[in-house]
Length: 310
Image (cartoon, rainbow, N blue to C red; front, side):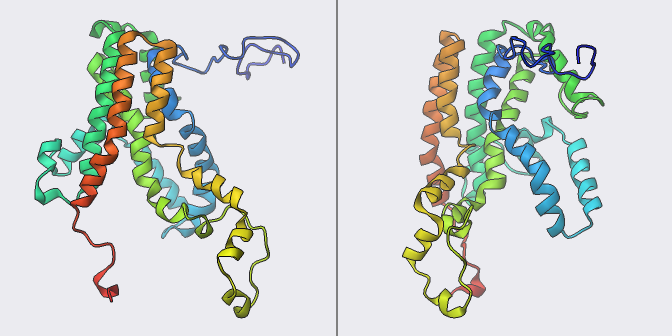
């Protein structure tokens, strides 16, 4: 093992005492780096969830129910991945390319009252962007400091490389502004965007009997047994404690809890300015509940199709 070239750290024996926390040769950006500090709360759980999705969700669920061949599913997803244009998908740019106003004021008109995603995301993006901007400008004094940050430049190379992430359209980060945009986008993808795309099922799944993780009684075998199913049966069927535990599964990408973590992280490793930025970030994020409720209240789209109305 001592002569192996396929090892991930310098510890070559199970009994050896070594700095495993700091010995991560595959980590391009070190844990103490300001960018790592900003991204860690958002990627801490998302990366493991996405890994599980690639191992289980795509091959075992998505491919069998897709409307085309499994090989074509692979081609479709790889094409989307390889042609992921980061800068085009920044929320202000994305909305503009889609023909929408890309400001809160522009989207507040009656014409866009039913475009809740656009209205919510343009506000969310600005709050995240402002927080990231304050923290990074506190750390970097000028654009040249970003250019000379070898960890950031190595990260860019790794993202673009054929031997790395193969993201050819990942931005060339040469300024504070470009770094702010990239980090904001990383947070946006991991939290708000991930939630908007994947968690519409929350309304269905948080009523656990609809999507239980396990059963603790035999399923009804006859129509007569099914007719006797009541609330008491359902509670014993799933066990209340397990139901309450599973109800929280949808929460790992919650921005409110992340804003709390941001404050904790900055208090441990940040400066007075970055701590103040994190506290302002938390205040604004928690205030979005009322903003989003107001947006929803102005919508006129009916959930029930006309054909199904009584």
